[in-house]
Length: 103
Image (cartoon, rainbow, N blue to C red; front, side, top):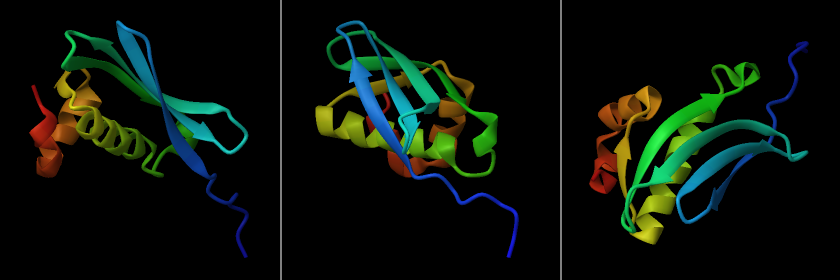
């Protein structure tokens, strides 16, 4: 038996306005534990500006979950992506299968 707390159940929710949006990493209680902010450059292109994940999730792939959900959302909506966010740029560099959505 360990003293570690069980890994929280996490989900990613997307919210968008005509000019910007956010993918939010949420726990079961509805608390935001991370997010990825973007702005809409055009009807077809978004620019990822910033990704942040709470330190309590270090090593639990929270940023990867947000990234994967963003890629899924972009494909589903026909959105192309540019990144100004160092984390997202690194993820595109490591994840060749996601590069099809790059603008």
